[in-house]
Image 1 (cartoon, rainbow, N blue to C red):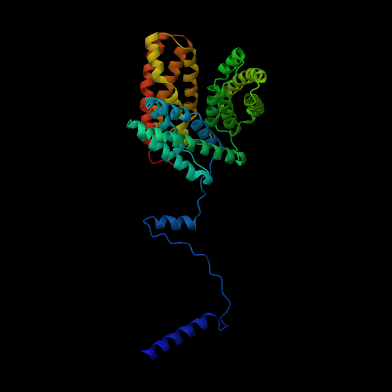
Image 2 (cartoon, rainbow, N blue to C red):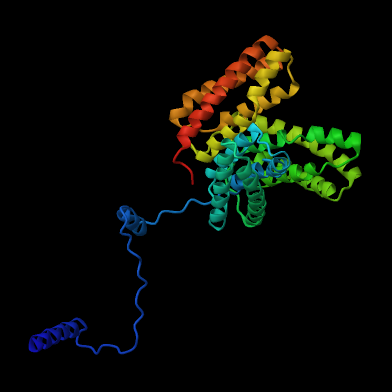
Length: 390
């Protein structure tokens, strides 16, 4: 056996020397190539293909991230946590607020640096929603504090990331309509009026102004609107500075400037959107979640109830309904939802026309149709987005 082993070793050495062309084998260490770990999972073939043909990783969109930050920062987690701790009572609105934020965050493409933190926050929100739904006050109180702290920390990291983020190159009608909706619903008219009358700065004004400024600053604007928008963003910055410094005199003056500029810019956006073409034919999960967010938060149930009981049209209803209609009209809907979405958009148009004409009978009837259709479409969006979370 020893003889046979030596023969085999000698034969292997001959083959090796032949392969090396008879040259001496280097005695210095030779760098070995980095080995790629072999995936033995059922999806190993897919991994191998991905290594052979690299697929670009979807990059995070600063507009998307800034919108998500604005939504989670304005959700009222601080107020929810405080109220739960003091009253030990769960308001039914808390659940819809939390789940609304979860839906948007789950469809956001997060930058690599924030992935883990964002998904940990989503997990906390999900656990919080479960406690709220089961009316578990003890868990809800504890989780509300966790969520509140995590929201602050994530928002802080988002702020840092946005500082160096590059915006998209093309203006997207969906993005423009979303930016318009945020600035139109910020309450600049109410701020200007209250500041003038009370000469007192509400701490909420600063966060509202900064939130709108951040979204608008990370929106890619069409060339026709860019100068006007940048001027408005500068006005928002000056207004925020006055608010932060508690300078009531300047805040009052700038609130008027901002209010007027917001109306003018919104009017120009409206014109631009009338002729704007979609930048893609594909439906995006984030756009659908934002459309759902706006229509679910519009308060169609409350409108229908109030209209039926008071037979009176609140002037705010028209701007709310037309704002939601504008955003939904710019979204590229998947074929599975398109007919339902277009029917809902049409019903919003009918409702807004009745509100604008001060036709109470038609407004009451349309409010019921819109309320029911909103619930049904939102339910369909939930089903469609299942499995599409990032």
